[in-house]
Amino acid sequence: MNDWPLRSAQAREELTEALGDVFEVGRDQAQLLMLSLLTTLIQHQQAGGARVYVRENSYFVGALPLLPEVRELAGLRPKYEQLYVQQPAQAHLLIQRALLARLVPHASRGGAA
Image 1 (cartoon, rainbow, N blue to C red):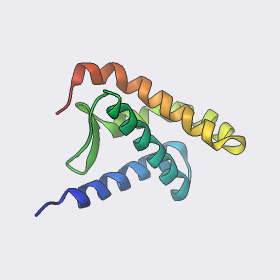
Image 2: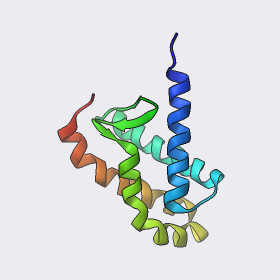
Image 3: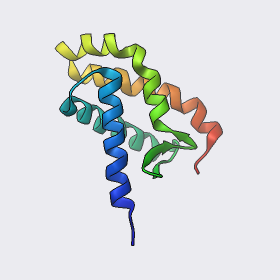
Image 4: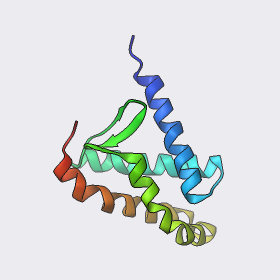
């Protein structure tokens, strides 16, 4: 039996919860941010970047687990909150760019698992 759909759903839930905790936002806003980040990572993958995949109910980018990298973005919370009030798309872009900046140097060294 293929359990990928279940693992993928669990990985999305785990990422949503982490984003809610890191940015101190509600579930709906955390889900939007999760979708925004996954879309960015998949677009980066399609442009030749590191592979995005689920392993053991968690997202990985190349050889790196995604959750620790997301947690490292906690310092951006004040700026994210400030931007989100007036320009939600810009707030998401801030987090997307920061996450890619963290992952891209590592992804080229880590490769895909």
